Image (cartoon, rainbow, N blue to C red; front, top):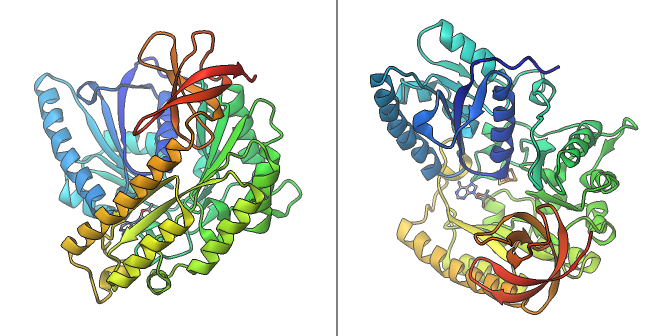
Amino acid sequence: MNEPRSAVRKKLFIKTYGCQMNVYDSDRMADMLAHHGYERTEDPAAADLVLLNTCHIREKAAEKVYSELGRLRRLREERRRRGGEMLLAVAGCVAQAEGGLMTERAPFVDIVVGPQAYHRLPELLARRARGRGGVIDTSFPQESKFDELPRPDRPSAVSAFLTVQEGCDKFCTFCVVPYTRGAETSRPVAEVLAEARDLVARGAREITLLGQNVNAYHGEGPDGREWGLGRLIRSLAEIPGLSRIRYTTSYPSDMDPDLIAAHGEVPQLMPFLHLPVQSGSDRVLRAMNRRHSIDDYRRIVGALREARPDIALSSDFIVGFPGEREEDFAATLALVEEIGFAQAFSFKYSPRPGTPGAAMPGQVRDAVKAERLARLQALLTEQMRRFNEAQRDRQLPVLFERPGRHAGQLVGRTPYMQSVHVEAPELRIGDLALVHVTGVHAHSLAGRLVTRSN
Ligand code: 5AD
Ligand code: SF4
């Protein structure tokens, strides 16, 4: 049951860092706080509660949070001078990792709450109001936050996120996720289907299933057995009105045969997959504790392309992992050439305290990392340009998500996530239509409407 809305409206500003799971969590926190009198604002200076939903994956991300907190503290002082008040709360993975350390480094922070405990925010706010000093909850509670959160009653975005899995048991030696998000858990199938139906009823036409290791999904099915992601996707595809399904992020060795087959059999499943390989060198992959070799990756990509020949791939790469030699890096470049990526994210290795990688010998100098990153990014950017260029004069289904800059213009996405600008005054947001691609720009496409397909 949702609690009655409080009469006094207070303002909530949320700043989200990092991954799409944080975007999902921020929305759920906002929905929950709406039931406690908070409405969202885009202006931090006007906020009664400022919530930073943080990311810990790379060092700079955590530092950014502390400098943002410094700015907010000054904003709060100004507000106090005008007789107002502002609460500062930090959620997400930096909160989880720093815990009590955060209220030592930034003692003016009111609330620190981890990613598994944010359903307790109203209670934490109440505790803060009663007492002095910061309130911290970075526990992994017995109860599932998903059971505690109210169902939102606002319209959904056309393209919505749905977290189905959290945590990670893989322990890649560079990564903090297993420590901040905890062990891998999957939501039950019935709960996921109910949330998906609700999203569609509120206007979603596309759902992206989220998880740190989403393809390791193993939720309890209605038959009492564990279902894999492939089976979950086949069930979601039966929801009328749900036109597109995506999932992210996947771990290569968890791409099981049923999930790969689903790419060939479920038309709603989009032919675009983010499948991080991290490095093209088996030696580095072993040091990273990745449970796949380059040959495994090749085989998985081969099977995916057999199932769905038009599938496009995206990946993450880390350069300068401890012990990475020039020849290892050359193997990464060679793998990129061989596979061909439509999109990719690449990072300099950032040693994270407490992870095995941080203590490994052979740390690579920053200048070397920077130089390798520049070479890799040049290649990846060129591949992305070629991929976009290959769409010119093709006809692609486009799901329209938002208005464009000019009247009558809409912006949508191709199956490959590219943004397309189209003059289409006769269409509405949420429509799916066939578009002839007429122009290719650095970050988007331009197109002409061919037919409306729904
Ligand atoms: N340093 C650099 N990149 C990292 N990633 C994760 N941890 C680190 C780190 N310590 C990258 C990986 C992962 C993506 C989300 O962030 O490539 O896939
Ligand atoms: Fe981190 Fe590896 Fe787990 Fe991904 S699979 S969240 S990189 S430990």
